Length: 437
Image (cartoon, rainbow, N blue to C red; front, side, top):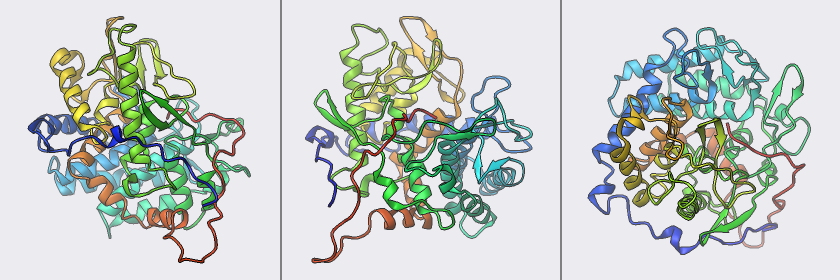
């Protein structure tokens, strides 16, 4: 190959026992069922009755987050498969959401605004047209398309996806912009770093209507570092969600990128994250062997991109956002499951309510979030289901667009004597930083 990343995945990342190695790790654990179902209820019960749009948070007056809608579309498919709602209820809700997206939401070259009003779909908070939030919505739509194959859901989802002009969001450059505003044009920042942005690149490369070049996959940076003995291709802030969001849909376990396997990399990131929290337990009362998972989320002074080393910068103040551990269950079940059980047993209703684990807590400041965030609950539902059945991966990976991305970026090895791989080296960038959703 013209490029190669070092083989850095240490043995400790592969030392986890199988999921059902003990009763506490059973995929049929009633506690996991409860957390997953309660988290799903956020999407079912807080949605607007007319549009089906899902709020960014449960705070009064919250607009809808288009990313939360994408997680919700997948969560509804899961709920149907588990008979938490009827098949017809699930289908009708998904059709309502997709019809709203197609007819009420303003789009720019197919891309959606980050935040929209719940009842009208109008742009909210002067938000940007967002590439990653559009990608998260489309992942949910394409999941629904495969789940409700051969129906109006599939037609609507495919049309919404094929309307997106991914090349426009490149703005003539090598990398995808994070967004665009009608008042000022494209945002300066690009998806130039290992991040959840890999989902947007996969969807863009797989497009049958407005694709970007497959070689773009290798333009973004893949910096490596070590913490606690775990070697990681790391994200800019080291937030755990950056290792989870794209992999909630894409099954990277069997998609090797040269010597790099993103799933194994996420395991190492979770282990390093926990090690970082244990190392800083003396500084912050919240941290410990069962209190870890630093990730972007609510904090005492607002939403922050919390993270752990290795990273370019790792911001932390003693706040834990529990969804970081919940979404790590398929990565490190032997650590994550006991940890979330410990949180629930120790703090009860301070940290857990009608829609599962709340947004965050900080013991030294005696701060307890009373809120839920749609993207937090969403990745919790999806990753718990993937741990328990693999259902989201199994269904989403059937998408012809994902198959096209894999074929274009990771074709079968050429026969002996064929032309050498001409893929470029990673890391071409103009210095923007990929940050949270």
